[in-house]
Image (cartoon, rainbow, N blue to C red; front, side, top):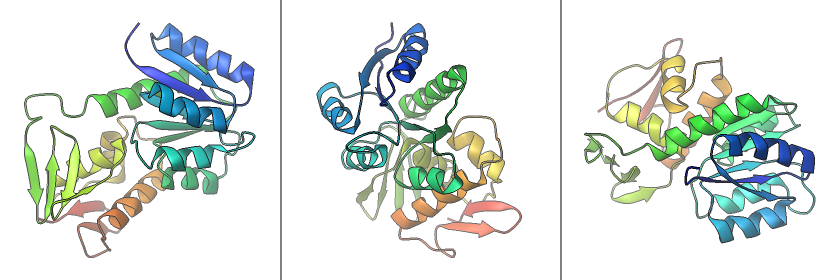
Length: 228
């Protein structure tokens, strides 16, 4: 048993039990919530390390739970939903989800994505260069606290957003392809997830009060870069 706790919020008991079985086999401590209201209560009472959220739940839906969660926490969130339209995925990512998996799903794939999200989020700041502070113009990335400041003001980032900023800021002036950004940010093999990348870059630009000619530049047909 490791010390990582996962909250599963889904109104289908069979799905919760299936996910719980697979995750407990991986050594995770799993807690269940049958709807959005219970999910919010347990988010505060147990402080999970990762949350798996269904969207269509009675009472408060998964999007509302995610909004409330993101007001005071940046833990990894994986949305698991029968809504598989691109617009739903983009909405979930825009609200702060780290990943989106459509139902029906392969439990082994879900476990792999949970493990990847855990590694991505909780290994940040480890290693010999963890104490380094990287500066690009008025941006300051602290690799020990895994935080980003602009002009001294802290900017709230998800784990994926942090890793993408780390990639850009440690290699100013270098052009990165969408594949390179995806594989570094999501720590997964590239599977043509242009929507994920575009949404994440757009969110970063908003948080940085950026535009096409600001911190993150778009090079059509090539990728993105950050200039020093």
